[in-house]
Structure formats: structure tokens, C-alpha cells
Image (cartoon, rainbow, N blue to C red; front, top):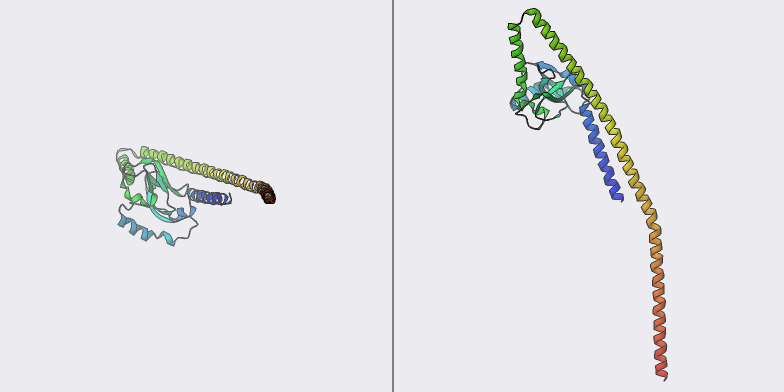
Length: 252
């Protein structure tokens, strides 16, 4: 029982640690924002990524994040590519990764579906999926076409509406992340309380069993010893009777 208790306690510590680490990553890293920079293009080969990563030199920056990895990804608005140092993230669901300025984090962008992306990949490997950077090229082409075919006043109005829409989307994303972070904190509290409750129950059962077991063993031992004494008495009487019969026979 004690071994089981220790095993469950270790499991509880590991679960809680992984949960805290997960939340630490999801919470974002404010230090990453100071390293964010819009760039014309992102690396699309391992060699290019290595070179750009060396130039960015994320390891030289002071930060309080869980890690600080080089990234070159799209922004939330899908109209710029961003170089940034930030904790890596697992991107799930065949979509592209993005840097969210409101949440200070690398995350999945559900609006950027990527047919060449695997079901799950590390955000630092985004350069392997150039399809994601096509979104910026499409935006550039649309912007160029709009500028050449739209009157100046209408073009300005359209740009302002698009900009306001993007701002609202960024605010919405930040609000959703705050709610998600709050939900994670509640989850940690629930998991912690539940595991503590389980440990208390196990320890109580272990101690109760020990207290109950000792009297049971004592009674069992007493019973066995009593039976042994009775057996010895019976054996003694049997030996005595045999001896008496043998003596009587010899006397006759």
C-alpha cells in the first residue's frame, strides 16, 4: 500500500508539473514582442533557417520565457511575415503557425489551412511548409491590384475598414487567450484538489488497514498458539495412555 501511495504521488507531481509547464507556454511570453520584426520573406530551407537563426541570435536575448527559439511565421492578419524569438509550440490540425502580438505567442492559425502540413508539427519547423507563406503573396497581389484599379478615396476607405477589422480580430484573439488561460488555471486547481483528495483517501485507508491488521494478526497468533498448546496436551495424554497400557500388559 505504501508503494502504491508513493507511485501515485509521483504521478501526481509529474502531471501537475507538465500542466504548469503547458500553461506557462500557453500564457505567452511578453519578452518575445521586443524581438518581433516584419521581414520581406521567411527562410524556406534548412540552410536558410540556420543562417537567419544565427543572425537573429535568440539565445543572446534576456528573457523570462520557458524557451526562446527563432521563428519566422505569418502574423495573425496573414499579410506580413514576422521574425521573432519565442517559445516553440506544437501546431495541430494541418494549419499554419502565426505570431500573435496580442498574446505574445506562437500559435496555430485556423484560417490558414495547409494541405502540405502534417497533422502535428513543431512551430520551429514552419519553414518546411512554404505553402503557408503563400498567404502573404496573395495579400500582396490583392493589394497591388486594388491600388491600380480602385480610386484613391475608395482605396483609402477600404484599407481603413480592413485595418479596423484586423485590429478587432487581434483584440478578439487576445480576449480568447485570456479566457483560455483562466480556464487552465481553474483546471490546475481542480486537478490539484482532486489528486490531494485521492492521496488523503489512500493514506487513510493505508493507516486504517495497518491498525486493523495488527489486532487481527495478534488474535490469529494467539489462536494458533492456543491450538498448538492444545495439540501438545493431546499428544501428551496420548503418550501417557500408551505408556500406561504398555505397562499393564507387561505386568500381566
